Image (cartoon, rainbow, N blue to C red; front, side, top):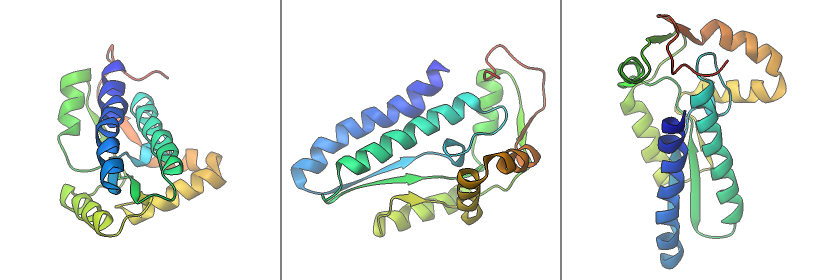
Length: 167
């Protein structure tokens, strides 16, 4: 958990801490934070990861409020499961395989949405359009969302390891 917090949240914090003085000095800038849809809505077997991504969201929202009225933009990107080395890293670092039944997207698709956000800054970016609906549904009906994410959430392929998320 400490490693995930160090990478996901503290990495975001230190990156912002380095960039913001430069943005302020030049009078403009754009901080883009790569979060995850699980930063808005946690899923099974991802409690620690979800918590680190939720921390990014709170941090970015606070920064955006502080920077209102300036020409410094803060954007949050909320990708869904993206075809990366994530599954391999989970096996390597935590000793178990995970599989998700929900939709997936390509790295190229996420990158294209980030480029679009650079061209036209906005507060939130959902590379997979349906994921915004999940965030809205969760805000309106979290119990119903529990049932939806249970159906499409991650499934454990192996026995729990010593580094599994807390349940």
